[in-house]
Length: 214
Image 1: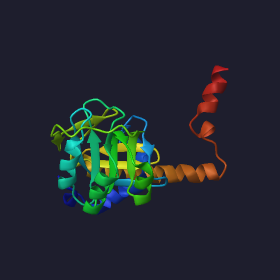
Image 2 (image 1 turned 180 degrees about the vertical axis):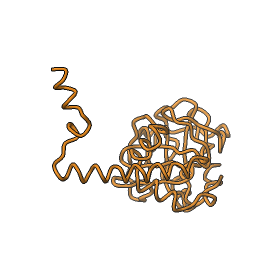
Image 3 (image 1 turned 90 degrees about the horizontal axis):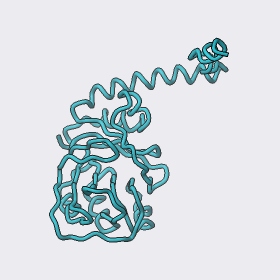
Image 4 (image 1 turned 45 degrees about the horizontal axis):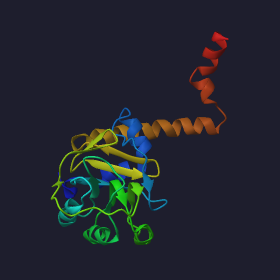
């Protein structure tokens, strides 16, 4: 499934909801459970993934991904073993930005950080490190990859914000949107109750349980 095949409205709903809500609404599934650096403060992004499994410590596969990326897609860059080796810098990011990529998720390192922040394209990365990659092995564009316990396939929706990253499989997008809307409605109801002075300690029965055990 390519970016043009996914409804823009569904992606917007997931992006607006954010990582935590998408993850919780889906029964705590799809979280990319690793530390990620949000390179551009305040940024968020969502879109269909375009994945690449690079050869270890090698970024030739990223060059091929730049030739295949479609507007609105999230570039997802990985290696067999996540290491602080820079798979991408300002020259490759320039190509992705011109091609219309919505964002970048790098399970390795990025470099040229000041330039990347100035470019404004949303980037999430495991590390910031100048150590460069080789260009000797092709890698696999559109391979299924795993990051932080989450499997990402080309066409899956990747959601990125200050809380990190979450993944929604391509064949679960519609149900994910339904679950997200239901959770947002529930949370708004709770938010109104807490603003009115009610306490979750009482509403969830925790006080009664604690007093009974005391």
